Image 1 (cartoon, rainbow, N blue to C red):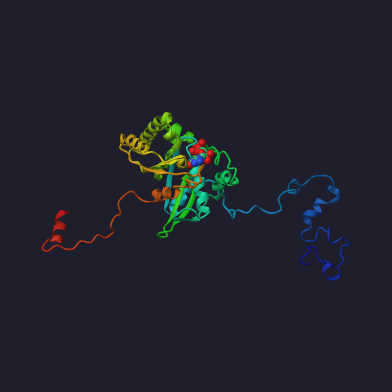
Image 2 (image 1 turned 90 degrees about the vertical axis):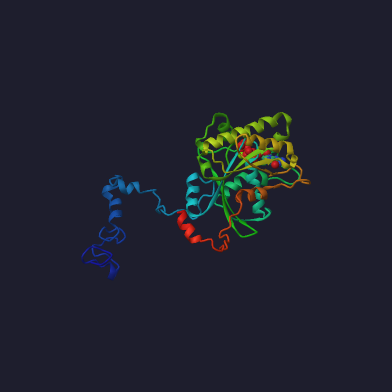
Length: 343
Ligand SMILES: Nc1nc2c(ncn2[C@@H]2O[C@H](COP(=O)(O)OP(=O)(O)OP(=O)(O)O)[C@@H](O)[C@H]2O)c(=O)[nH]1
Ligand SMILES: [Mg+2]
């Protein structure tokens, strides 16, 4: 018997011929031939007697690997992925609200185009876990030749799951001090804001509780239009009221992002009225005029104001705190005894 055959007296190893005068390729005593011998047994010919052997025909020859793929998906991230990221590093979550067509997606697409071309003053690109999602929203703006810009740089935002926000992620480095900031930016349909104001549907906005900054994006042309202006301003007030209820009165930093700066600067009268409307609810906000795209390149470059928007979103409104303020001892103050007595 040899290692290749279980027949005692096998001669294939020495002579190359089978002691039982069989073909070594098909002899059922040869190790490894048992299954095939059954499969091609003339007695069994045409009879699918072994269903397991037959079911293996056409099955994948390699097993699917159980590890994660080398390149994880880089489309929008769900709230769970953002929470996971927040557990390992400091992430600035930004709430982005605004009516349909106000310019929310345009701000994100333009921000991506600016930073990817190293055009965002004061900031450098470091990483993104959602590059494909940025590419998707910026595609419209990419595919145009200078003479013929498309009518719409971005398209109306629709989500595959209308109850879960999808976030875009971007890590930036500040030129002045090398500080890294991770931004989580949701691209939401304007209807979410309309329904929050109109019917106070707030279940989809739970993530705002983790937001450090909220951008309320407003169409600058609507604000400069006498007929539409008052409507927009009142709705900003109502939105602030809804946010107050949702967040238990404590609003994070609020930025009024006024788009279409290329059509003109927001007038002082408009910003004063916006601030007054918010003041009725005890809310303050900073106005940031931007032009993600521009129909007037000569006067206002596309991407205008986006660096200010990022700077305002990443700096605290609180005055800087001195980590270790100097306190020179006063003669005869008996500070130590005084300290114990205060306790
Ligand atoms: N010229 C110019 N066009 C702008 C500006 N901001 C936005 N747009 C255009 O306005 C249109 C609507 O902008 P979007 O960013 O898609 O609007 P949105 O708020 O995301 O709208 P929804 O997804 O429907 O909620 C797009 O065609 C943009 O290219 C701007 O500052 N200047
Ligand atoms: Mg959009």
